[in-house]
Length: 298
Image (cartoon, rainbow, N blue to C red):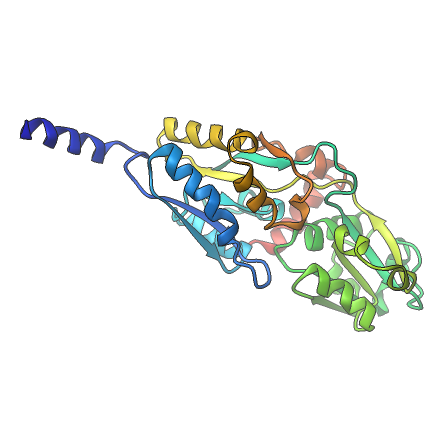
């Protein structure tokens, strides 16, 4: 009996994927590390897969990218911009997109709003090309999709290829709320942020500002899996994500609560490397997108 037990123990230990602790990672936003939001999913996966699952939060999108490039992450929740930076970088990585949340019936779910302060002389987006040299521009954060990548693509579409040199100053506010607060306080003339912050303003606040542009709907960021995981394990993780809205609605809700843009999402859908291409093609050529991505690769 002992030889049999020894053989079974050894067999389990050497099986790739299933005999390891899965490392689930995310990135911090403002004062929320998002670990509590992902712990219900970790517990769900641990029960379904029979494998320990840990949750770790990185300080930024760029720190999460670095950890994935170093092979330190098995499952990652990352922003759309973060994924595009990962793919555009020259550093090899073992991650692939497998799923993303969608909000198929939502209206104005996840867009970029570019807004100016009334009295700044900016009443249309194209005014930024001719008058932007004397204006102060606020973005959200270097790793923000709706607060950095998409507004830069929108600005590129009106001829502003390098926002950092076009405006009199560039400021990263840190959060979407702080970006619009910079306008309201008069410390910025123009700001870009997720449209939810614009929509949350009351009438008095909106009347002091001017909405210049709303982007198309932005697809939500992907869940990435490490390709070095055993294939059967990858398939099981993917299946659990795609079925989460039915099998564990509470875990799905916890994930949605971690991202404002995910509030209206209903479920995960399978995605691949080309998932974000149709969206990017609405905002610029492949070369134009690449030029902006390169600026933020570390």
